[in-house]
Length: 447
Image (tube, rainbow, N blue to C red; front, top):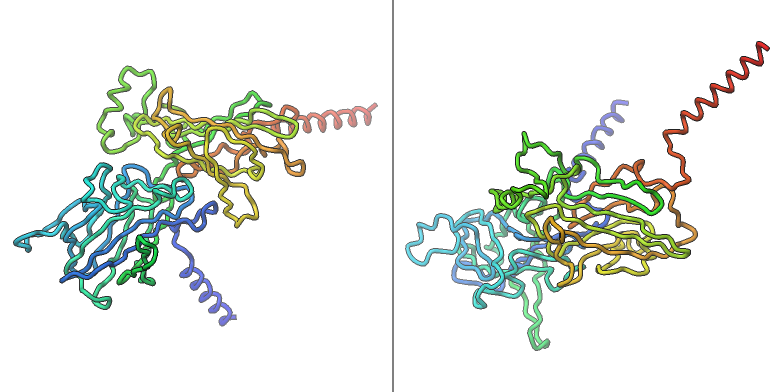
């Protein structure tokens, strides 16, 4: 028995050590999504190398929006950055030991940001200068990567003397991403412009970063409301979905749309730090998604989806919406949105879809106000074997806005069909039936 107990302890310890960290990101709708950072050493210099660094967004529906990415790391030795093209560091650091021509950055742990659009052409490289905004391959493949060139000194001049940096961090600009170690991989090959010759990087290493909404923020950023043509009840976002109105502990966190101080609140101190200023609501969410079951035909049914922006300080550029619903394999027509199935289960089940706005039409979700919404209608074909309006089947299972999971109403609050009896009334009916049956039996006994 003691030996068995010892084996059990060892097995439990092994499982504990092999288990993923609590903050490790995994999303069943995008199980392989990540951001990969690739360093390609292109040439040696007298004291180091010149490298092309590219950030690839391999996530299906989570992009990096303004004000953009911030990439950081720690040098393995005493490296410096002599120059950069297409990006810059936020600080130069202490370069006092260099008497002439100081480096671009001498910090042991530099932080790099993208340059803004409109940067002079001589300071650009391909895929740079977009303000740190990176789209997804699903939504905009041409803008799903960001690159810069870096010249590193005091670094070694051979594959054996160069050391890969450590402790990579990726902010967007807040937290949320966890980056693994840099791994040396097979050198990248580049095809020349004429298509007849390839060149090869001197050395290549990759860094993989994954996203966790838990690390990104403690509170949700969106919520879902539900309604239908067959029930007058509108199920709103759950109260305090993204926070509660509390002017004592969080003064100035929300503002009423008819307040005379609306503009001054928008232009307050939080304007330049990106602090949200939302319209005062019961849910206090920056974004609300309303799913309305609109019409029922013989062979089809129609849904209206409305996305409303309650944040007075934010225009959501290139927004996207991901919805999970069992009838998405029968989408027949979509109005005013782009659409692509996600198929996270290898194509066996198609119950997840990504929606986003049309370029120059509704890809910009304006800040709170009369124009702060985007709408679409979805026509779906009925499957006689699975279709039903009962038990909340017509409503989505999960909803994401810009990659963040939205708060759903509790299932027992979903709009019921008219012929469905409210569940709370059944126990009282049963109790009355039992009471009258017992009373009749008692009267008959004494008659």
